[in-house]
Amino acid sequence: MLKVPDHQVAGHMAGAGALGPLVDDAGNFFKPLQSNERGAKEVAFYKGFSTETRIPYKIRKFFPVFRGTRDLEASDGSGLHPHLVLEDIVSSRTNPSIIDVKIGSSTWYPEASEQYITKCLKRDRDGTSLILGFKICGFQFYGNKETGFWKPDRKSVNAFTHDDVRSALRKFVSSNSPSDSDAEPDCSYASTVYGGPDGIVSQLLKLKSWFEDQTIYHFYSCSTMMVYDKESIMKGENPNPQIKLVDFAHVVEGKGIIDHNFLGGFCSLIKFLNDVLNNPNK
Image 1 (cartoon, one colour):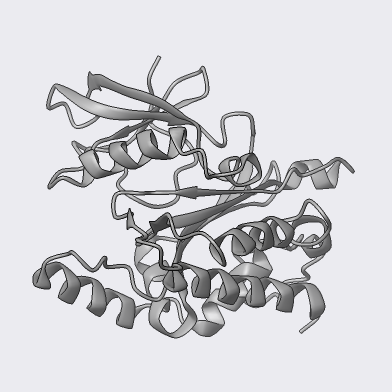
Image 2 (tube, one colour):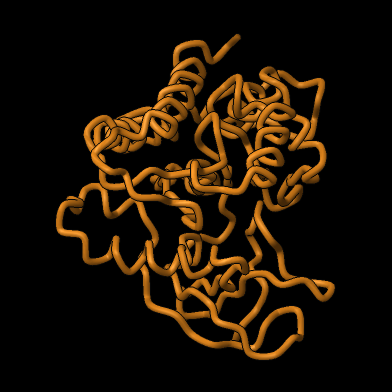
């Protein structure tokens, strides 16, 4: 049975006659193909990526599994619509904490129209993309069974400043309530989620190492999803921190040139997370 995702934090969302993704109970995420050739470009990327022999497994695991395309009844009631069939990266988690981070100081691709570039450039300037090399697009933090999730509205997230980004990345790994604006985040889960050989920073460093060499693709307006299970930490279990790259409608051929836009965003995000690790009480 198809339904609207419970844990989507950014992007086009289904509901109230809007076209958005759907999920099923078998671990599939159905993303409706976008218009203006973006959908076709994303399908082409997934097909090419899935057969690209130059990409090692240790990197491939950071991308959702591609399971083809399928025509489904659209969430907006408009009838059959083609959808990407992807791995639902949170299907095995009960109450995941999630942050969606758009990587890169520029979210527009070189071949885009002047009108589109102008639109993206304004958005990048108004947010933190240009100054930080990345932008938080959405998130949800799980508190506990009593408080549930805290998910700020999109308008407030889009208005984030440098300090807001730093605060959100600290709240993401704190045990105290993220909705309490007067409480200083305690960052008590930072070493478990961000740190360690299997933590988010270690995973980002592996991707960074690949981006320092790979010239196959250039990624624009793509996001890194950071996910973990807070309840597992409270039970003394592994929270299974994980990152996945998503959204590939604007990927272009690398043409033998290193993707410095994406690489710079990764370096900046790693720096912010290391600051949380090294200065948890500040």
